[in-house]
Image 1 (cartoon, rainbow, N blue to C red):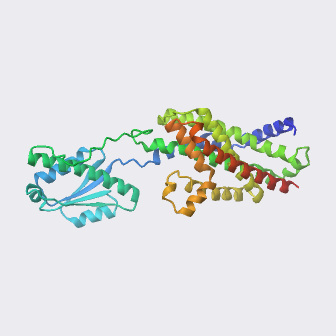
Image 2: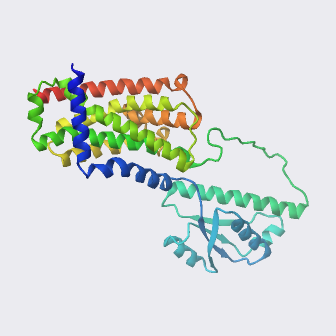
Image 3: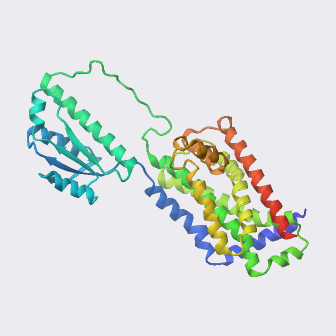
Length: 373
């Protein structure tokens, strides 16, 4: 194996890649735009919940309840009405996210020391957000209940209540951005490495230069290394730049070893580059290669635990996730960023990625050799 020939092929690949003006935005601008967009869009934090209220009681107690909602920064009362049907209509038209119906006997029941029901209507078209909104509303109602009890009995009644002293580790403010942004970095690396590698060989085929490469003294392994090394350098460079940008722009904490992330990314690229080579052997055009690439990207994304917890998936799907290298890389990148853990904790993920990467890459190389023959 001649490293001189590999070096010249790598140089040729860089020239060919950056000579095409269409590739420059994809390599330089697109990762930052995607990081900014996804970093701000992907969030499970509950903010600015629009509330509609039907107050059939119109008493001091009902006004205190509305004041408790308004005092909370999460809620914003945008609709007042006297007719329940109007509230149903604005909820249907998505003008409010949550609706409260206060009955006419609300104050009377409270003054008698009885339970006063309040109906909560939530837009369940987004089930996760609806559950969070209802939970936040329940906290406000619990605080209102405690205030009413103190007013009636002139003392705070906590008898028999469990006093939970909660401390959240690794993400004290429960900021979902700290959870999603490291995952976005991993997704961007996967997409770029898959797209660039799958296009590299197809571009030679469409230009009619693949035969010229075959008749050169280049050995198959040299051709493969010359085609993959540029994209390893590009993706690693982009990863460093994107991570630095995420730390500075989003104030993302990096508690672990940065070089451990680089090592993990190299193992992750074994799988993605191998899949890219495989796509290049089964595709005849760049359009076909791109469509096939997105066929791999979607299952990787869905089965990685990026958004949906793997533990909540069906058992069969959970077993399939073990074949997904993105699953292990997400554990590593989030563990290094948020927990600051090292190899003593993450070694199972490193071994799994190494095994998957070697199997995929060696299989792709063997198939590619057959196409060269």
